[in-house]
Amino acid sequence: MAVDLKMPVLIVDDYATMLRIVKNLLKQIGFDNVDEASDGGQALQMMKLKKYGLVISDWNMQPTSGIELLRTVRADADLKGTPFIMVTAESKTDNVIEAKNAGVSNYIVKPFSSEILKGKIASVLGQF
Image 1 (cartoon, rainbow, N blue to C red):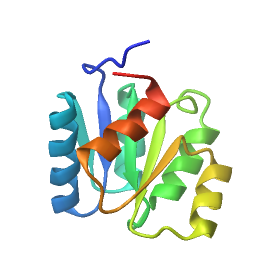
Image 2 (image 1 turned 90 degrees about the horizontal axis):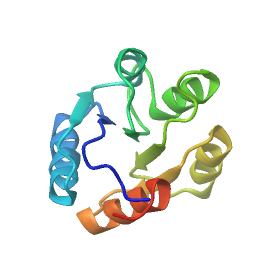
Image 3 (image 1 turned 120 degrees about the vertical axis):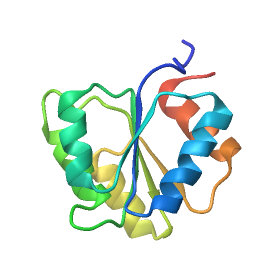
Image 4 (image 1 turned 180 degrees about the horizontal axis):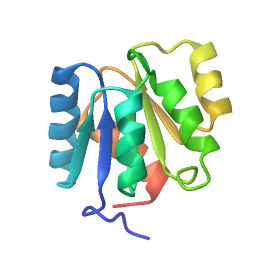
């Protein structure tokens, strides 16, 4: 099944520069329906209003972190099936295990290229 490049994608990061970088990488891959949230709480509100085909969230955010967002999404009957990729600057094994236990679809360590992002998205959603 081919990836629908028109599907809405939500990127979540409290660092505006990172939002811009990820949005640009997604555009390079072909996604043009991209929304942004600056923390997990805002992202959750947006997810309740609109069905996203993919969420790409930073781990370290205040006041609501990416891992808290992930746990909340997985516990919500309407949202639990949403593909979720976690982005972090830390590649600690404990973090990877915690994210997997919380139900993350995939995991990316910063910095990353559009090719790495495309590969992670393909592993979650299928080939382009």
